[in-house]
Image (cartoon, rainbow, N blue to C red):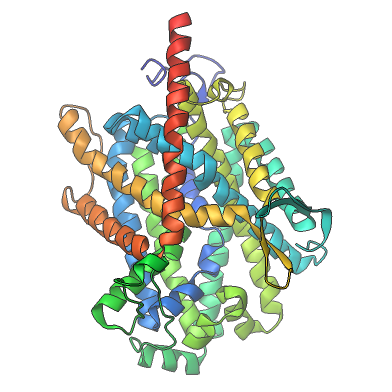
Length: 520
């Protein structure tokens, strides 16, 4: 395709442009910061409580994160070949399109825009506002600017002060990223460096300053002893007849199920490592640096995540990790070290972390909409760049949809008639975890497909450990998906439905694109 050809454009002196105007401003350090910054949000500070309840032991908690690390790093090392082969804006959308067909690329891009990227950004924005509320109590989810308005029996729309802060964050970061990738990368570098230092500080304080000898003895002397493991039930009533309820103490099968289910939280916390691929057209040396950024970034983050969990085990007994208030394990750990002031320290760290995380996600996500539009598979205006070389219209479309997800609420009425409100994006993110794994496995399988389809293509980087490392990921991801189908059924089938809803949308867009080509 002519749009995807690498075209050097002589424009502003000293600024390298390619692919119709993108500015090549992202170096290896910048790319690594995008990977690290997009991966570290608020998950690492929270999900360990759920993992500890599912695995039931200190060793199980650490091993679950090690499994996540092996999967994430093996995926990143495998993606490097595709990133070097197709160093264009859109990343994984391009890889799936070229390996299989435009339909598969579109289904990924559709799901990414509808839920994966935008839902994650919405969740991180609410997390930012929630922890800002620790420092400024007026930022409350119960202080309404617009009271919840029911739009059906199950859904409502509202605007609390907490939601308003989240919306303002989205508007602010979207605006900043329309001013050019140079500014976006500077913000990313500053906040990623700050959050990395914050996480290192948490690890240092828990391991060396506030270490709890009783907790260390309890956790590491009984490293594999299963205590307080929650039962894991089949994900649907019709499965109860032939799929057993298990715990991590139910033998080898129970452990297999526990570690599979535990991957939902840890894999989601380690996601977004592929975002640098979306910005490949803005990387100075994309055939080398996109792959290296993925590899370096994932290794840094996984190392920090495992050390953070070691820190939790040094500060808190396992039971306190399992039952941390609101699952805020990091806050509980710092509270054990500093007392009540620990909550404020942790809030500042998470505010920095979530701000930097959303900057990276907003910067990268719009590039997929741009690539889809260039293929005629999205709104045409999103396939344009502004004078600063960024897809400003795609950024605005993305921002509008994120705000819609923040404002929409789920509505629950209990037996007494009391109404409680949840977050729609939270349900949607639960739904797509399974679909994300499908797309990752398909993309890595695309390495095998493309080596057969394009054996003579230039491959500046080849997948590490091919074919064993890519196969390891595909097999492990398939095993986790099997577990989720049986034990998280209620959240897997809606995710598949969201993906499949993209098929008629693809047919509509592709028909429109063909008609447009005929006119031109």
